[in-house]
Length: 228
Ligand SMILES: N[C@@H](CCC(=O)N[C@@H](CS)C(=O)NCC(=O)O)C(=O)O
Image 1 (tube, helix red, strand yellow):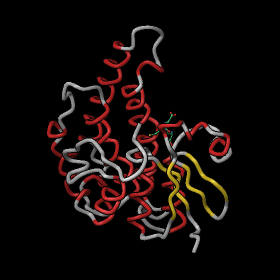
Image 2 (tube, helix red, strand yellow; image 1 turned 90 degrees about the vertical axis):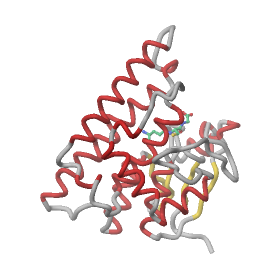
Image 3 (cartoon, protein in one colour; image 1 turned 45 degrees about the vertical axis):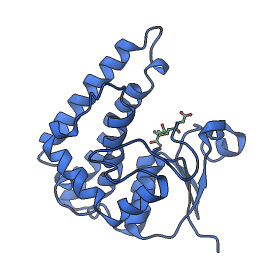
């Protein structure tokens, strides 16, 4: 039977954040692999779902939805879970950190992963700049008193968004083992706690992410498709 939700995904891509939330919420969903090896994200069929040609898309009963943060917020809103309730003081900081994840950390990571797309000529200075920025962002997050979702052990859309980003920083951030999550003990504890959850285990199994996908990640070996 066709389900109401369909996740267009590629292994270890931003779609992983959405998969984690879907698993955490226990919602039934179908998946469609977007085959990056043939640039399926730029095909006419996919551009009709997301004109940006980027993964993920979540197809919903109201039509396709793109942007990781928008999808996570929509899921939280429609399910009444994974975010503090609207109108509560806790909601204010929860929204603040969602915007920060989407608007600050994620873009800096993307520049670090793909510096040539952001540089005229030599991409190395751009990569160094982005690495410094990511380090500074994680310093800010790990010291933040209002980011209680880091320590609570409660599932949240923030956790579903941050955990993959910590993984990607380690795996795709530019070699030389520059990234050591133990430098930020609070974030390291968060990653260990999060990867022990059933939702994380199911997502890791579906996408071939290994045993410690967030606290000490290794290259992904997906059953289908490719990360890049
Ligand atoms: N702001 C977008 C970024 C999505 C994004 O960059 N997705 C990457 C995979 S993690 C992608 O589709 N890359 C393929 C490409 O650039 O062609 C979001 O959060 O949904």
